[in-house]
Amino acid sequence: MTISNKAIIITGCTKGIGRAIADCFAEQGFDIAGYARNHKDIAAMQALYTKQYPSQRFLFLSADASKKTDVLQFAQTVKDNFSSVAVLVNNAGVFLPGSIISEKDGTLEKLIKTNVYSAYYLTRALKDVITKNIVNICSIASLQAYEAGASYTISKFAMLGFSKQLRHEFKNTGIAVTAVMPGAVLTNAWTGADLPDSRFIKATDIGKIIFTIYELHPSAAVEEIVIRPQLGDI
Image (cartoon, rainbow, N blue to C red; front, side, top):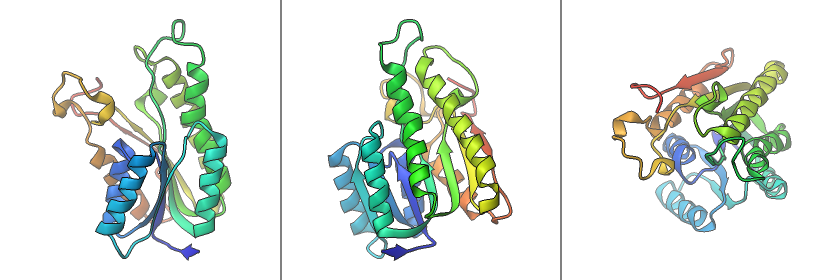
């Protein structure tokens, strides 16, 4: 078991925002535990990071965020290997477009399980090993409805509510809780979009923001961050 003041847990760690966060913290010397659904992606990330940062410790596992058993098994593996970690980033999530009236039956349930329940279960399971920060990746969809948002918007409103409640409950623990609400971030989700890169936030900037939050003095808590493309929402 490792005791580390420089360790972070990241869900949905192999792509997009999660991967950018992992890259940022790995460069700063952090040990990292994380999960994502695709086993090949996880294995490739484990091999790359272990080779690139041989003095650090990495625990990347395959898990499905929509399955409670997978999330809790991941949590137990983390606790078996780390007695403490500085930061938990609840990033795992999925986007399915649609309207409330016409979207496929079961869409709301899938998005709530993946985007909200996974964070709820993992935070509860790891409450005794987190020492400094909990960061929940929400969305501008946590603040406003938009075209084809449907169940995704509902799930992200719930995620912001989860963050607000956590912030209230953790005030006296020394753990700061932050909701990060990005607009359109340049990830694979936007593949095929006929838009220039300048219309998007860079995922690397989300990683930098979270590292800045970590570096703050424990007397400060950043409760919410909204970050949009300079030219506005897409």
